[in-house]
Amino acid sequence: MQPEHSFVPNMRIRRRALAGMALIFLATFAAYAPVFHAGFIWNDPDYVTGPALRSLSGLWRIWFQVGATQQYYPFLHSAFWVEHRIWGDAPLGYHLLNVALHATSAVLLLTLLRRLAIPGAWLAAMVFALHPVCVESAAWISEQKNTLSTVLYLASAISYLRFSDLRTPGRYGVATLFFVLAVLSKTVTATLPAALLVLAWWRTGSVSLRRDVAPLLPWLVFGAAAGLFSGWVERHYVGAEGAAFDLTGLERLLLASRAVWFYAAKLVWPADLIFFYPRWTISSASPAAYAYLLGVLAALAALAALSRRSRAPLAGALFFGGTLFPTLGFFNVYGFVFSYVADHWQYLASLGLIVPICAGLARAAQGLALPVRRAAAAALLVALAVLTWRQSGMYSDMETFYRTTIAKNPGAGVAYSNLGAYLLEHNRVPEAREEFEAALKVQPDYKPAHFNLGVILLDSGRYEEAVAHLRMASGTLHQDYVHLYLGEALADLQRYPEAAAEYSLHTRLEPGNAAAWSGLGDALAHQEQYSAAAGAYRRALSIAPDLVGAHNNLGNVLLLTGQVAAAVAEYREALRLRPGDPALQKSLQLALEAQKTGG
Image (cartoon, rainbow, N blue to C red; front, side):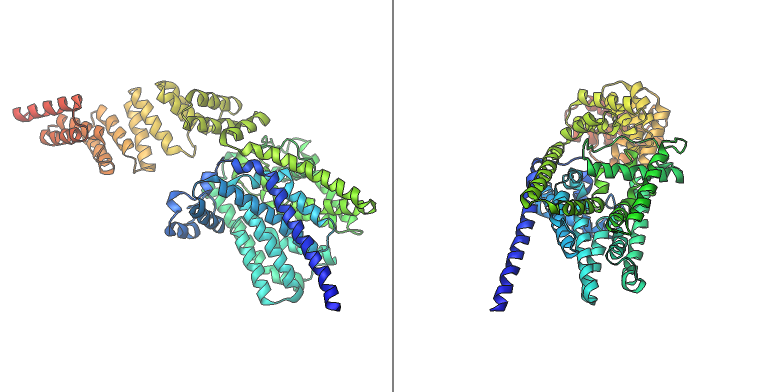
Protein backbone atom coordinates (compact mmCIF):
# COMPACT_ATOMS: atom_id res chain seq x y z
CA MET A 1 0.00 0.00 0.00
CA GLN A 2 2.98 2.35 0.46
CA PRO A 3 3.36 3.23 -3.24
CA GLU A 4 -0.28 4.33 -3.31
CA HIS A 5 0.23 6.74 -0.40
CA SER A 6 3.29 8.32 -2.10
CA PHE A 7 1.51 8.50 -5.46
CA VAL A 8 -1.44 10.59 -4.26
CA PRO A 9 0.64 13.49 -2.90
CA ASN A 10 2.69 13.51 -6.11
CA MET A 11 -0.52 13.75 -8.13
CA ARG A 12 -1.71 16.61 -5.94
CA ILE A 13 1.59 18.44 -6.41
CA ARG A 14 1.39 17.99 -10.15
CA ARG A 15 -2.20 19.19 -10.26
CA ARG A 16 -1.31 22.25 -8.21
CA ALA A 17 1.65 22.93 -10.49
CA LEU A 18 -0.52 22.62 -13.60
CA ALA A 19 -3.18 24.81 -12.04
CA GLY A 20 -0.54 27.44 -11.26
CA MET A 21 0.73 27.36 -14.83
CA ALA A 22 -2.80 27.59 -16.23
CA LEU A 23 -3.47 30.59 -14.00
CA ILE A 24 -0.36 32.31 -15.34
CA PHE A 25 -1.64 31.87 -18.89
CA LEU A 26 -5.18 33.00 -18.06
CA ALA A 27 -4.00 36.07 -16.16
CA THR A 28 -1.53 37.01 -18.89
CA PHE A 29 -4.08 36.73 -21.69
CA ALA A 30 -6.64 38.69 -19.67
CA ALA A 31 -4.18 41.51 -18.94
CA TYR A 32 -3.18 41.68 -22.61
CA ALA A 33 -6.73 41.55 -23.98
CA PRO A 34 -6.49 44.98 -25.70
CA VAL A 35 -3.58 43.71 -27.80
CA PHE A 36 -5.74 41.16 -29.60
CA HIS A 37 -7.53 43.98 -31.44
CA ALA A 38 -4.26 45.71 -32.29
CA GLY A 39 -2.56 46.10 -35.65
CA PHE A 40 1.01 46.65 -36.80
CA ILE A 41 3.07 49.51 -35.39
CA TRP A 42 6.45 51.19 -35.85
CA ASN A 43 8.76 48.72 -37.67
CA ASP A 44 6.56 45.60 -37.61
CA PRO A 45 6.59 45.43 -41.45
CA ASP A 46 10.39 44.97 -41.25
CA TYR A 47 9.92 41.79 -39.23
CA VAL A 48 6.72 40.27 -40.59
CA THR A 49 8.07 38.44 -43.63
CA GLY A 50 8.00 40.61 -46.74
CA PRO A 51 7.17 39.41 -50.27
CA ALA A 52 10.84 39.03 -51.27
CA LEU A 53 11.47 36.45 -48.50
CA ARG A 54 8.28 34.39 -48.52
CA SER A 55 9.58 31.62 -50.80
CA LEU A 56 11.96 28.78 -49.96
CA SER A 57 14.76 30.80 -51.54
CA GLY A 58 13.73 33.63 -49.22
CA LEU A 59 14.14 31.31 -46.25
CA TRP A 60 17.63 30.47 -47.52
CA ARG A 61 18.41 34.21 -47.75
CA ILE A 62 17.24 34.69 -44.15
CA TRP A 63 19.98 32.33 -43.01
CA PHE A 64 22.79 33.02 -45.46
CA GLN A 65 22.46 36.62 -46.70
CA VAL A 66 23.37 39.29 -44.19
CA GLY A 67 21.14 42.29 -44.81
CA ALA A 68 18.20 40.28 -46.14
CA THR A 69 16.50 41.09 -42.83
CA GLN A 70 16.89 44.20 -40.72
CA GLN A 71 18.95 42.33 -38.11
CA TYR A 72 20.67 38.98 -38.49
CA TYR A 73 18.40 36.87 -36.28
CA PRO A 74 17.81 33.90 -38.61
CA PHE A 75 15.89 31.68 -36.22
CA LEU A 76 13.54 34.53 -35.31
CA HIS A 77 12.93 35.39 -38.97
CA SER A 78 12.45 31.71 -39.78
CA ALA A 79 9.71 31.67 -37.15
CA PHE A 80 8.15 34.75 -38.77
CA TRP A 81 8.46 32.98 -42.15
CA VAL A 82 6.45 30.02 -40.84
CA GLU A 83 3.93 32.30 -39.14
CA HIS A 84 3.30 34.22 -42.34
CA ARG A 85 2.41 30.96 -44.06
CA ILE A 86 -0.16 30.31 -41.33
CA TRP A 87 -1.89 33.67 -40.90
CA GLY A 88 -0.38 35.91 -43.57
CA ASP A 89 -0.62 39.64 -42.91
CA ALA A 90 -3.37 39.42 -40.28
CA PRO A 91 -1.90 40.84 -37.03
CA LEU A 92 -4.06 38.79 -34.63
CA GLY A 93 -2.04 35.59 -35.02
CA TYR A 94 1.24 37.37 -34.34
CA HIS A 95 -0.18 39.06 -31.25
CA LEU A 96 -1.64 35.82 -29.88
CA LEU A 97 1.67 34.02 -30.32
CA ASN A 98 3.69 36.84 -28.81
CA VAL A 99 1.55 36.94 -25.66
CA ALA A 100 1.63 33.12 -25.50
CA LEU A 101 5.43 33.17 -25.68
CA HIS A 102 5.52 35.74 -22.88
CA ALA A 103 3.28 33.56 -20.72
CA THR A 104 5.44 30.53 -21.57
CA SER A 105 8.51 32.38 -20.35
CA ALA A 106 6.72 33.04 -17.06
CA VAL A 107 5.89 29.33 -16.73
CA LEU A 108 9.49 28.35 -17.52
CA LEU A 109 10.67 30.89 -14.95
CA LEU A 110 8.38 29.24 -12.39
CA THR A 111 9.86 25.82 -13.29
CA LEU A 112 13.41 27.13 -12.98
CA LEU A 113 12.85 28.87 -9.64
CA ARG A 114 11.15 25.83 -8.13
CA ARG A 115 14.05 23.66 -9.26
CA LEU A 116 16.37 26.07 -7.45
CA ALA A 117 14.07 26.07 -4.39
CA ILE A 118 13.83 29.87 -4.45
CA PRO A 119 10.97 31.15 -2.28
CA GLY A 120 8.24 33.23 -3.91
CA ALA A 121 8.67 31.38 -7.21
CA TRP A 122 5.02 31.61 -8.26
CA LEU A 123 4.82 35.28 -7.22
CA ALA A 124 7.95 36.10 -9.27
CA ALA A 125 6.57 34.29 -12.32
CA MET A 126 3.26 36.14 -12.05
CA VAL A 127 4.94 39.51 -11.53
CA PHE A 128 7.02 38.93 -14.65
CA ALA A 129 3.92 37.88 -16.60
CA LEU A 130 1.90 40.93 -15.52
CA HIS A 131 4.53 43.65 -15.11
CA PRO A 132 3.72 46.62 -17.40
CA VAL A 133 7.40 47.07 -18.30
CA CYS A 134 7.02 43.87 -20.32
CA VAL A 135 4.15 45.27 -22.40
CA GLU A 136 6.49 46.79 -24.96
CA SER A 137 7.90 43.32 -25.66
CA ALA A 138 4.68 41.31 -25.52
CA ALA A 139 2.41 43.79 -27.35
CA TRP A 140 4.85 44.83 -30.09
CA ILE A 141 5.07 42.20 -32.83
CA SER A 142 8.68 43.06 -33.72
CA GLU A 143 9.70 42.19 -30.18
CA GLN A 144 8.90 38.56 -30.70
CA LYS A 145 12.70 38.51 -30.74
CA ASN A 146 12.43 39.15 -26.98
CA THR A 147 9.64 36.72 -26.17
CA LEU A 148 10.94 33.88 -28.38
CA SER A 149 14.57 34.25 -27.32
CA THR A 150 13.59 34.33 -23.63
CA VAL A 151 11.64 31.08 -23.95
CA LEU A 152 14.72 29.47 -25.51
CA TYR A 153 17.02 31.10 -22.93
CA LEU A 154 15.05 29.74 -19.98
CA ALA A 155 14.67 26.33 -21.64
CA SER A 156 18.44 26.25 -22.08
CA ALA A 157 19.02 27.23 -18.44
CA ILE A 158 16.67 24.50 -17.18
CA SER A 159 18.30 21.93 -19.48
CA TYR A 160 21.77 22.97 -18.31
CA LEU A 161 20.78 22.54 -14.66
CA ARG A 162 19.60 19.02 -15.51
CA PHE A 163 22.93 18.40 -17.22
CA SER A 164 24.80 19.68 -14.14
CA ASP A 165 23.14 16.93 -12.09
CA LEU A 166 24.05 13.92 -14.28
CA ARG A 167 26.59 15.33 -16.77
CA THR A 168 25.28 13.32 -19.72
CA PRO A 169 26.17 14.37 -23.30
CA GLY A 170 22.51 14.24 -24.34
CA ARG A 171 21.43 16.79 -21.75
CA TYR A 172 24.36 19.04 -22.61
CA GLY A 173 23.43 18.80 -26.28
CA VAL A 174 19.82 19.80 -25.61
CA ALA A 175 20.93 22.76 -23.48
CA THR A 176 23.41 23.85 -26.16
CA LEU A 177 20.79 23.62 -28.90
CA PHE A 178 18.39 25.84 -26.97
CA PHE A 179 21.21 28.31 -26.28
CA VAL A 180 22.27 28.54 -29.93
CA LEU A 181 18.67 29.04 -31.08
CA ALA A 182 18.20 31.73 -28.43
CA VAL A 183 21.27 33.64 -29.64
CA LEU A 184 20.06 33.30 -33.23
CA SER A 185 16.81 34.93 -32.12
CA LYS A 186 18.39 37.81 -30.17
CA THR A 187 22.02 38.15 -29.13
CA VAL A 188 21.32 39.54 -25.67
CA THR A 189 20.81 35.88 -24.71
CA ALA A 190 24.53 35.39 -25.27
CA THR A 191 24.84 36.52 -21.64
CA LEU A 192 23.40 33.17 -20.46
CA PRO A 193 26.74 31.41 -19.74
CA ALA A 194 27.80 34.36 -17.57
CA ALA A 195 24.44 34.19 -15.81
CA LEU A 196 24.93 30.46 -15.16
CA LEU A 197 28.32 31.21 -13.60
CA VAL A 198 26.68 33.79 -11.33
CA LEU A 199 24.08 31.15 -10.47
CA ALA A 200 26.83 28.64 -9.62
CA TRP A 201 28.48 31.20 -7.33
CA TRP A 202 25.14 31.94 -5.65
CA ARG A 203 24.51 28.25 -4.99
CA THR A 204 27.96 27.22 -3.71
CA GLY A 205 29.86 30.42 -2.93
CA SER A 206 32.58 29.64 -5.48
CA VAL A 207 33.10 28.93 -9.17
CA SER A 208 35.00 25.79 -10.15
CA LEU A 209 37.05 25.96 -13.34
CA ARG A 210 36.45 22.30 -14.15
CA ARG A 211 32.88 21.94 -12.90
CA ASP A 212 31.41 25.30 -13.88
CA VAL A 213 33.60 27.13 -16.40
CA ALA A 214 34.80 24.33 -18.70
CA PRO A 215 31.34 23.20 -19.96
CA LEU A 216 30.41 26.80 -20.68
CA LEU A 217 33.55 27.77 -22.59
CA PRO A 218 32.08 26.86 -26.01
CA TRP A 219 28.99 28.88 -25.15
CA LEU A 220 31.10 31.86 -24.08
CA VAL A 221 33.08 31.77 -27.33
CA PHE A 222 29.97 31.41 -29.49
CA GLY A 223 28.13 34.12 -27.56
CA ALA A 224 31.03 36.56 -27.79
CA ALA A 225 31.40 35.97 -31.53
CA ALA A 226 27.65 36.38 -32.08
CA GLY A 227 27.62 39.58 -30.02
CA LEU A 228 30.50 41.12 -31.97
CA PHE A 229 28.91 40.13 -35.26
CA SER A 230 25.56 41.56 -34.18
CA GLY A 231 27.26 44.83 -33.26
CA TRP A 232 28.90 44.95 -36.69
CA VAL A 233 25.53 44.37 -38.39
CA GLU A 234 23.98 47.07 -36.20
CA ARG A 235 26.54 49.58 -37.40
CA HIS A 236 26.84 48.66 -41.07
CA TYR A 237 23.31 47.53 -41.95
CA VAL A 238 20.99 49.14 -39.37
CA GLY A 239 22.84 52.48 -39.22
CA ALA A 240 24.14 52.64 -35.64
CA GLU A 241 26.99 55.03 -36.33
CA GLY A 242 27.51 58.72 -36.88
CA ALA A 243 27.11 61.89 -34.83
CA ALA A 244 24.32 60.45 -32.67
CA PHE A 245 26.80 57.93 -31.22
CA ASP A 246 29.75 60.26 -30.64
CA LEU A 247 30.31 59.64 -26.94
CA THR A 248 33.64 59.36 -25.18
CA GLY A 249 34.46 56.28 -23.12
CA LEU A 250 33.77 58.19 -19.90
CA GLU A 251 30.45 59.46 -21.22
CA ARG A 252 29.44 55.91 -22.14
CA LEU A 253 30.21 54.86 -18.56
CA LEU A 254 28.12 57.72 -17.20
CA LEU A 255 25.30 56.80 -19.58
CA ALA A 256 25.41 53.17 -18.45
CA SER A 257 25.24 54.07 -14.76
CA ARG A 258 22.26 56.37 -15.32
CA ALA A 259 20.47 53.76 -17.44
CA VAL A 260 20.86 51.10 -14.72
CA TRP A 261 19.09 53.30 -12.17
CA PHE A 262 16.43 54.23 -14.72
CA TYR A 263 15.58 50.59 -15.43
CA ALA A 264 15.56 49.65 -11.76
CA ALA A 265 13.23 52.55 -10.95
CA LYS A 266 10.78 51.56 -13.71
CA LEU A 267 10.64 48.02 -12.34
CA VAL A 268 9.99 49.14 -8.79
CA TRP A 269 7.59 51.95 -9.74
CA PRO A 270 6.26 51.41 -13.29
CA ALA A 271 4.79 54.87 -13.86
CA ASP A 272 4.90 57.01 -17.02
CA LEU A 273 6.00 54.20 -19.29
CA ILE A 274 6.61 55.53 -22.81
CA PHE A 275 7.66 53.99 -26.10
CA PHE A 276 10.14 56.84 -26.74
CA TYR A 277 11.65 58.23 -23.55
CA PRO A 278 13.30 61.68 -23.73
CA ARG A 279 16.86 61.39 -24.98
CA TRP A 280 19.27 62.46 -22.28
CA THR A 281 22.21 64.80 -22.75
CA ILE A 282 25.29 63.01 -21.49
CA SER A 283 28.28 65.20 -20.65
CA SER A 284 31.36 64.36 -18.63
CA ALA A 285 31.56 68.08 -17.76
CA SER A 286 28.37 67.86 -15.68
CA PRO A 287 29.01 67.06 -11.99
CA ALA A 288 25.45 65.69 -11.63
CA ALA A 289 26.21 62.94 -14.17
CA TYR A 290 28.64 61.32 -11.73
CA ALA A 291 25.98 60.84 -9.05
CA TYR A 292 24.57 57.81 -10.88
CA LEU A 293 28.00 56.24 -11.24
CA LEU A 294 28.80 56.81 -7.57
CA GLY A 295 25.41 55.33 -6.71
CA VAL A 296 26.15 52.17 -8.71
CA LEU A 297 29.55 51.76 -7.03
CA ALA A 298 28.04 52.31 -3.57
CA ALA A 299 25.25 49.82 -4.23
CA LEU A 300 27.72 47.17 -5.42
CA ALA A 301 29.89 47.73 -2.37
CA ALA A 302 26.88 47.38 -0.06
CA LEU A 303 25.68 44.22 -1.82
CA ALA A 304 29.21 42.76 -1.67
CA ALA A 305 29.27 43.36 2.08
CA LEU A 306 25.80 41.84 2.42
CA SER A 307 26.88 38.75 0.46
CA ARG A 308 28.58 37.44 3.62
CA ARG A 309 25.07 36.86 4.94
CA SER A 310 23.21 36.31 1.66
CA ARG A 311 24.61 36.11 -1.86
CA ALA A 312 21.18 36.44 -3.49
CA PRO A 313 20.96 40.27 -3.73
CA LEU A 314 24.40 40.60 -5.29
CA ALA A 315 23.71 37.69 -7.65
CA GLY A 316 20.48 39.38 -8.76
CA ALA A 317 22.24 42.70 -9.30
CA LEU A 318 25.01 41.04 -11.33
CA PHE A 319 22.42 39.29 -13.48
CA PHE A 320 20.50 42.54 -13.94
CA GLY A 321 23.52 44.62 -14.92
CA GLY A 322 25.17 41.87 -16.93
CA THR A 323 22.09 41.17 -19.02
CA LEU A 324 21.56 44.89 -19.61
CA PHE A 325 25.23 45.36 -20.55
CA PRO A 326 24.82 45.12 -24.38
CA THR A 327 22.31 48.00 -24.37
CA LEU A 328 23.80 50.24 -21.69
CA GLY A 329 25.80 52.35 -24.13
CA PHE A 330 29.12 50.57 -24.40
CA PHE A 331 28.06 49.37 -27.86
CA ASN A 332 26.15 51.30 -30.50
CA VAL A 333 22.47 50.42 -30.71
CA TYR A 334 20.42 52.10 -33.44
CA GLY A 335 17.65 52.98 -30.99
CA PHE A 336 20.02 55.46 -29.31
CA VAL A 337 19.13 57.85 -32.14
CA PHE A 338 15.77 58.29 -30.39
CA SER A 339 16.48 57.45 -26.75
CA TYR A 340 19.17 55.84 -24.65
CA VAL A 341 16.63 53.67 -22.81
CA ALA A 342 13.65 51.54 -23.80
CA ASP A 343 11.41 49.16 -21.87
CA HIS A 344 12.06 46.24 -24.22
CA TRP A 345 15.80 46.42 -23.54
CA GLN A 346 15.27 45.29 -19.96
CA TYR A 347 12.75 42.51 -20.67
CA LEU A 348 15.11 39.63 -19.87
CA ALA A 349 17.26 41.61 -17.42
CA SER A 350 14.20 42.43 -15.30
CA LEU A 351 14.35 38.91 -13.86
CA GLY A 352 17.49 39.96 -11.98
CA LEU A 353 15.41 42.27 -9.76
CA ILE A 354 11.96 40.65 -9.91
CA VAL A 355 13.17 37.30 -8.58
CA PRO A 356 15.17 38.47 -5.52
CA ILE A 357 12.56 41.09 -4.60
CA CYS A 358 9.76 38.51 -4.73
CA ALA A 359 11.89 36.04 -2.80
CA GLY A 360 12.51 38.70 -0.16
CA LEU A 361 8.79 39.51 0.05
CA ALA A 362 7.97 35.81 0.41
CA ARG A 363 10.44 35.43 3.27
CA ALA A 364 9.24 38.61 4.98
CA ALA A 365 5.62 37.44 4.78
CA GLN A 366 6.23 34.01 6.32
CA GLY A 367 5.07 35.19 9.72
CA LEU A 368 1.72 36.39 8.36
CA ALA A 369 -1.42 34.31 8.14
CA LEU A 370 -1.97 32.53 4.83
CA PRO A 371 -5.12 34.56 3.93
CA VAL A 372 -3.21 37.80 4.54
CA ARG A 373 -0.31 36.67 2.34
CA ARG A 374 -2.69 35.66 -0.42
CA ALA A 375 -4.62 38.91 -0.22
CA ALA A 376 -1.42 40.98 -0.40
CA ALA A 377 -0.14 38.98 -3.38
CA ALA A 378 -3.51 39.28 -5.12
CA ALA A 379 -3.59 43.05 -4.58
CA LEU A 380 -0.12 43.43 -6.07
CA LEU A 381 -0.89 41.24 -9.07
CA VAL A 382 -4.23 42.90 -9.77
CA ALA A 383 -2.56 46.32 -9.68
CA LEU A 384 0.10 45.15 -12.14
CA ALA A 385 -2.53 43.54 -14.38
CA VAL A 386 -4.56 46.76 -14.52
CA LEU A 387 -1.44 48.76 -15.41
CA THR A 388 -0.56 46.23 -18.10
CA TRP A 389 -4.11 46.31 -19.51
CA ARG A 390 -3.98 50.12 -19.69
CA GLN A 391 -0.50 50.14 -21.21
CA SER A 392 -1.55 47.58 -23.82
CA GLY A 393 -4.23 49.94 -25.10
CA MET A 394 -1.69 52.26 -26.72
CA TYR A 395 -0.78 49.48 -29.20
CA SER A 396 -4.30 49.24 -30.65
CA ASP A 397 -3.37 51.00 -33.93
CA MET A 398 -0.67 53.17 -35.42
CA GLU A 399 -2.42 56.48 -34.82
CA THR A 400 -3.26 55.72 -31.19
CA PHE A 401 0.28 54.49 -30.65
CA TYR A 402 1.89 57.71 -31.85
CA ARG A 403 -0.65 60.10 -30.31
CA THR A 404 -0.23 58.39 -26.92
CA THR A 405 3.55 58.68 -27.24
CA ILE A 406 3.31 62.38 -28.11
CA ALA A 407 0.97 63.03 -25.17
CA LYS A 408 3.49 61.47 -22.79
CA ASN A 409 6.62 62.83 -24.46
CA PRO A 410 5.89 66.04 -26.42
CA GLY A 411 9.56 66.30 -27.36
CA ALA A 412 9.58 63.06 -29.39
CA GLY A 413 10.17 64.38 -32.89
CA VAL A 414 10.16 60.88 -34.34
CA ALA A 415 6.61 60.29 -33.03
CA TYR A 416 5.27 63.42 -34.75
CA SER A 417 7.09 62.53 -37.96
CA ASN A 418 5.92 58.92 -38.00
CA LEU A 419 2.36 59.97 -37.23
CA GLY A 420 2.63 62.37 -40.16
CA ALA A 421 3.85 59.54 -42.41
CA TYR A 422 0.89 57.42 -41.33
CA LEU A 423 -1.57 60.26 -42.04
CA LEU A 424 0.09 60.94 -45.39
CA GLU A 425 -0.25 57.27 -46.33
CA HIS A 426 -3.98 57.58 -45.62
CA ASN A 427 -4.32 60.76 -47.73
CA ARG A 428 -4.83 63.02 -44.71
CA VAL A 429 -2.38 65.53 -46.15
CA PRO A 430 -3.21 68.69 -44.13
CA GLU A 431 -3.00 66.76 -40.84
CA ALA A 432 0.22 65.09 -41.97
CA ARG A 433 1.79 68.44 -42.77
CA GLU A 434 0.94 69.71 -39.29
CA GLU A 435 2.68 66.71 -37.71
CA PHE A 436 5.83 67.14 -39.81
CA GLU A 437 5.97 70.82 -38.89
CA ALA A 438 5.47 69.91 -35.21
CA ALA A 439 8.33 67.40 -35.47
CA LEU A 440 10.65 70.10 -36.82
CA LYS A 441 9.68 72.50 -34.04
CA VAL A 442 10.92 70.08 -31.37
CA GLN A 443 13.74 68.60 -33.47
CA PRO A 444 14.76 71.03 -36.24
CA ASP A 445 17.32 68.68 -37.79
CA TYR A 446 15.09 65.58 -38.00
CA LYS A 447 15.70 64.46 -41.58
CA PRO A 448 12.66 62.19 -42.18
CA ALA A 449 10.32 65.08 -41.29
CA HIS A 450 12.17 67.38 -43.69
CA PHE A 451 11.89 64.73 -46.40
CA ASN A 452 8.15 64.14 -46.03
CA LEU A 453 7.37 67.83 -45.67
CA GLY A 454 9.42 68.49 -48.80
CA VAL A 455 7.36 65.94 -50.74
CA ILE A 456 4.09 67.54 -49.58
CA LEU A 457 5.32 71.00 -50.59
CA LEU A 458 6.45 69.64 -53.95
CA ASP A 459 3.01 68.14 -54.61
CA SER A 460 1.37 71.45 -53.69
CA GLY A 461 3.56 73.42 -56.11
CA ARG A 462 5.68 75.21 -53.49
CA TYR A 463 8.93 74.28 -55.18
CA GLU A 464 11.38 76.64 -53.46
CA GLU A 465 10.25 75.51 -50.01
CA ALA A 466 10.31 71.89 -51.16
CA VAL A 467 13.93 72.26 -52.30
CA ALA A 468 14.93 73.79 -48.95
CA HIS A 469 13.42 70.91 -46.94
CA LEU A 470 14.68 68.20 -49.28
CA ARG A 471 18.21 69.55 -49.01
CA MET A 472 17.86 69.42 -45.21
CA ALA A 473 16.88 65.75 -45.61
CA SER A 474 20.26 64.89 -47.15
CA GLY A 475 21.68 61.81 -45.45
CA THR A 476 18.35 60.20 -44.61
CA LEU A 477 17.70 56.50 -45.22
CA HIS A 478 15.67 57.62 -48.27
CA GLN A 479 18.64 59.39 -49.81
CA ASP A 480 17.91 58.04 -53.31
CA TYR A 481 14.42 59.56 -53.23
CA VAL A 482 15.77 62.82 -51.85
CA HIS A 483 17.68 63.12 -55.13
CA LEU A 484 14.61 62.11 -57.17
CA TYR A 485 12.29 64.67 -55.61
CA LEU A 486 14.96 67.35 -55.66
CA GLY A 487 15.37 66.71 -59.37
CA GLU A 488 11.63 67.10 -59.88
CA ALA A 489 11.42 70.33 -57.82
CA LEU A 490 14.46 71.87 -59.50
CA ALA A 491 13.10 71.00 -62.96
CA ASP A 492 9.82 72.71 -62.05
CA LEU A 493 11.89 75.77 -61.12
CA GLN A 494 13.65 75.49 -64.52
CA ARG A 495 16.99 74.96 -62.80
CA TYR A 496 17.83 72.23 -65.26
CA PRO A 497 21.58 71.69 -64.64
CA GLU A 498 20.89 71.13 -60.92
CA ALA A 499 17.90 68.94 -61.74
CA ALA A 500 19.99 66.79 -64.09
CA ALA A 501 22.64 66.37 -61.38
CA GLU A 502 20.04 65.19 -58.85
CA TYR A 503 18.40 62.80 -61.30
CA SER A 504 21.83 61.37 -62.15
CA LEU A 505 22.57 60.75 -58.47
CA HIS A 506 19.24 58.97 -58.08
CA THR A 507 19.84 56.72 -61.11
CA ARG A 508 23.18 55.66 -59.65
CA LEU A 509 21.49 54.61 -56.41
CA GLU A 510 18.31 53.26 -58.03
CA PRO A 511 19.13 52.37 -61.67
CA GLY A 512 15.80 50.60 -62.19
CA ASN A 513 13.62 53.71 -61.82
CA ALA A 514 12.23 54.54 -65.28
CA ALA A 515 10.65 57.83 -64.12
CA ALA A 516 14.06 59.08 -62.95
CA TRP A 517 15.68 58.29 -66.30
CA SER A 518 12.82 60.06 -68.08
CA GLY A 519 13.20 63.08 -65.80
CA LEU A 520 16.92 63.11 -66.49
CA GLY A 521 16.15 63.07 -70.20
CA ASP A 522 13.85 66.09 -69.80
CA ALA A 523 16.47 68.06 -67.87
CA LEU A 524 19.15 67.29 -70.47
CA ALA A 525 16.83 68.12 -73.37
CA HIS A 526 16.13 71.54 -71.88
CA GLN A 527 19.89 72.13 -71.96
CA GLU A 528 19.97 71.04 -75.62
CA GLN A 529 22.06 67.99 -74.74
CA TYR A 530 19.95 65.96 -77.16
CA SER A 531 22.19 62.93 -77.59
CA ALA A 532 22.48 62.39 -73.82
CA ALA A 533 18.75 63.04 -73.42
CA ALA A 534 17.92 60.40 -76.05
CA GLY A 535 20.10 57.91 -74.19
CA ALA A 536 18.25 58.64 -70.91
CA TYR A 537 14.85 58.21 -72.58
CA ARG A 538 15.92 54.91 -74.14
CA ARG A 539 17.13 53.70 -70.73
CA ALA A 540 13.73 54.64 -69.26
CA LEU A 541 11.90 52.74 -72.02
CA SER A 542 14.09 49.66 -71.57
CA ILE A 543 12.75 49.53 -68.01
CA ALA A 544 9.15 50.60 -68.71
CA PRO A 545 8.28 50.25 -72.43
CA ASP A 546 4.78 51.68 -71.90
CA LEU A 547 6.02 55.05 -70.60
CA VAL A 548 4.10 57.35 -72.96
CA GLY A 549 5.89 60.55 -71.96
CA ALA A 550 9.31 59.02 -72.63
CA HIS A 551 8.22 57.87 -76.10
CA ASN A 552 6.87 61.34 -76.88
CA ASN A 553 9.88 63.22 -75.54
CA LEU A 554 12.29 60.86 -77.27
CA GLY A 555 10.37 61.59 -80.46
CA ASN A 556 10.82 65.32 -79.85
CA VAL A 557 14.58 64.94 -79.37
CA LEU A 558 14.91 62.76 -82.46
CA LEU A 559 12.92 65.23 -84.51
CA LEU A 560 15.12 68.10 -83.36
CA THR A 561 18.25 66.18 -84.38
CA GLY A 562 16.87 65.33 -87.82
CA GLN A 563 16.07 61.66 -87.11
CA VAL A 564 12.57 62.07 -88.48
CA ALA A 565 11.71 58.44 -89.24
CA ALA A 566 12.78 57.37 -85.75
CA ALA A 567 10.73 60.23 -84.30
CA VAL A 568 7.64 59.08 -86.24
CA ALA A 569 8.09 55.58 -84.82
CA GLU A 570 8.20 56.94 -81.27
CA TYR A 571 5.09 59.09 -81.78
CA ARG A 572 3.22 56.11 -83.26
CA GLU A 573 4.13 53.98 -80.25
CA ALA A 574 3.00 56.73 -77.89
CA LEU A 575 -0.35 56.94 -79.72
CA ARG A 576 -0.72 53.17 -79.59
CA LEU A 577 -0.38 53.33 -75.84
CA ARG A 578 -2.67 56.36 -75.54
CA PRO A 579 -5.04 56.37 -78.54
CA GLY A 580 -6.75 59.63 -79.48
CA ASP A 581 -4.50 61.92 -77.45
CA PRO A 582 -4.67 65.27 -79.33
CA ALA A 583 -1.16 66.41 -78.35
CA LEU A 584 0.36 63.14 -79.52
CA GLN A 585 -1.66 63.26 -82.75
CA LYS A 586 -0.36 66.78 -83.44
CA SER A 587 3.24 65.72 -82.77
CA LEU A 588 2.87 62.76 -85.12
CA GLN A 589 1.29 64.97 -87.82
CA LEU A 590 4.19 67.46 -87.63
CA ALA A 591 6.69 64.62 -87.86
CA LEU A 592 4.93 63.11 -90.88
CA GLU A 593 4.90 66.47 -92.63
CA ALA A 594 8.60 66.88 -91.91
CA GLN A 595 9.16 63.37 -93.30
CA LYS A 596 7.29 64.28 -96.52
CA THR A 597 9.31 67.46 -97.02
CA GLY A 598 12.51 65.68 -96.11
CA GLY A 599 13.28 68.21 -93.36
